[in-house]
Image (cartoon, rainbow, N blue to C red; front, side, top):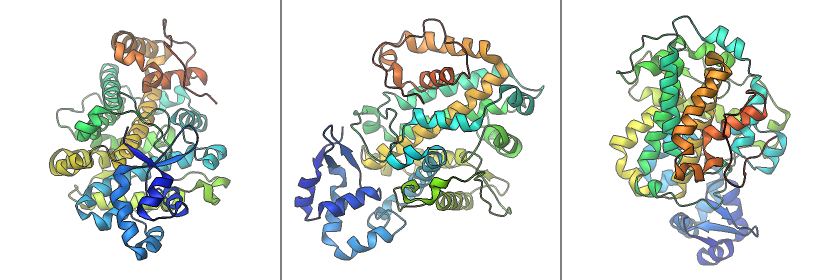
Length: 419
């Protein structure tokens, strides 16, 4: 875990009041961790930015009015990274603000297991309706299964050792060290992208068995042009339905409103943005990314943001990513990628349940579970944190599936929460 010092220690070291530091935390401008006794501590990797604040009285006043993180100004070499980071962060917050209930919004205690259950309750999933409207006679069950499994493998590979837990709030709450994130930070970006890409690719084969996967971008382009609209009506609800196409008038993709959204507690901690402002900001991100080297017929979605980020981190931004190491930026990035991948994986599993039926889907899941998780000591030790296990248990709790696989047993203490 990254080293941290108490709020009082930091206040004295930089001659910044504790109330000012708490305000920075509230606006998501510095990271913090909370001990068992509730004592707040700040991470050492934020000390350079705190030193800048202590030396610049004017900036102490201006910082809360700026929409962009002050790293943009003081570290221009991070601009490309921060634009991807912030876009992905906005998308993750759109998920949280859209589906969190009043209690979750007020407490600012976001848990992915509870949030996914709230999402499923609103989705009102109907497997017969999904199959009738999204699956054609040209579907390839074999290819759907192959790419679903590929998505599962990559999601586990990206998330292990599952240090993010279920907490997806603003605090970094006693996260375990992740050696891979420290040594190979760009691999997290690449693996999460390939997991989400594989999930999307499985959807392509619900309608067209002939799309070539040899040309990497072809499945993504096909889905955006031919399937996104109909999937948005049944599965890909907000914010997964947000896209930009050149020439189309900007519109809001929010299909509902909630009374809670008018109150301050339902705003994103960073810059206190409302869900409507976040949606506008994210849409602007899609336009900006489109204008940087896209085909004029391209449709930009979250998958395309992740693709561009993967390309950048793997080729142009490798030195920047490596220099970040295990700072708060990367920890929050991993949390956001984990959140997005968790939901995309769930959406694709719901499609698979529709096309295969519960018995065949359970058989596919059982094979994956027995062959890859149960007999793997390292994975089995993390049983409660494996995303696929978590989602399946939620499906069972909500009676989306009626039975668990045989021998589907937990090895230790249960951290999952049910509504």
